[in-house]
View 1: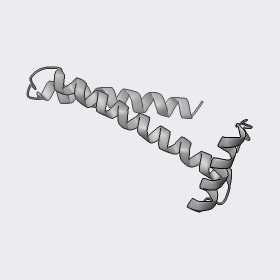
View 2 (view 1 turned 90 degrees about the vertical axis):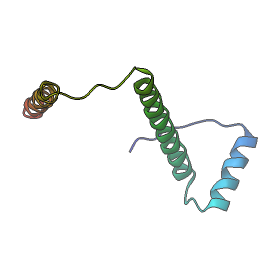
View 3 (view 1 turned 60 degrees about the horizontal axis):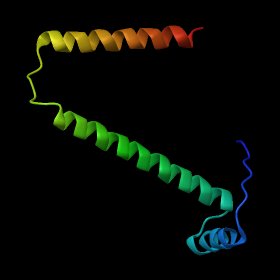
Length: 89
């Protein structure tokens, strides 16, 4: 793990210490890790929502063809092959 030092005004320090005590966090670090995790989840959710909206606004759906599926399989195989060769380097 890496240590990060942050500076907080006294009022924020008091708030953080109060939250840690009231909500059962064992350390201030645990509280900040939870805040970062929540932020990561929120941003991932926002990104997913953006992608879903883009998909809905992209026009009418078209049926998948056998060629579409073959292209998808080929792309996946290429990516797996690239990952495999990068892992062996």
